[in-house]
Amino acid sequence: MRKHYSVFFLLITFFSFFHFHHALMCFLKERVTCVSTLELMGFRVGQGLIERFTKDCPTFKEDLDIMKFLCKDLWSTIFRKQIDNLRTNHQGTYVLQDNKFALLTQFSTGKQYLEEAPKYLAFSCGLIRGALSNLGLESVVTAEVSLMPSCKFQVVIQKL
Amino acid sequence: MAVCIAVIAKENYPLYIRSVPTQGELKFHYTVHTSLDVVEEKISGVGKALADQRELYLGLLYPTEDYKVYGYMTNSKVKFVIVVDSSNTSLRDNEIRSMFRKLHNSFTDVMCNPFYNPGDPIQSKAFDSIVSTMMVQAF
Image (tube, rainbow over the protein chains, first blue to last red):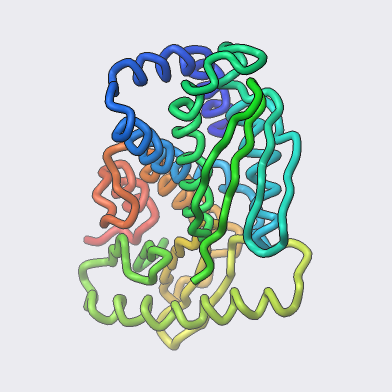
């Protein structure tokens, strides 16, 4: 019952998320601090979300299982679709490609507004980093956009 | 009904310990601390055995002459430890599992609280009241 409630809550907030996100952008005008503040916010949200969504899952066996969980379950719960492509070099680097990233679909389908995109990806980068951190993997997450609305998140796991 | 309930962070320091006040608290701190070794053993042991489904519930960690200690580890490596009186034989496995389930649900709520920083001691009143319902009522 609890699980349905939180998913329902997420769906409700999803529609207003775009507008909230955009309002947040306008509020945080300075480019440099804007991106890092958003990333930190995403980090904290990612930690909380993971705690809620892995409540009923068995323990993960290895890093690849964690990445698959991120691409399928977490992404579909938050963005209502799965990651389209996951690539790895099996040495701790993963590239997640989303061909129709939910936060970018309203911008353009091409190269227009490409320079505005990084700000809108910061929160999601933080989300991925927070989710992985709570599952025990420290990482560095960056995003790149070459053609809207498709984007690639690069995750590099930091081995101690 | 538990005699002591503890929540331990992934770095192995306590986020929350509560025990029945009539008995020495230090003894429970010690019991919980030693149980961490058993938890580590169980986790690494299961990996080698390649179990199909790794459960979060770890079961009875070790029995002493006075107490029985049960463990549970979440996916974010936070451990819950419940210490139960040995003389209380009516407590079945299912009941312990449901206690851990309630603890996990309550902990998830604490985690999602934006005013809570992960790694800080837990000070949530809601969490306290859930734990109170599971502790032996002190007179």
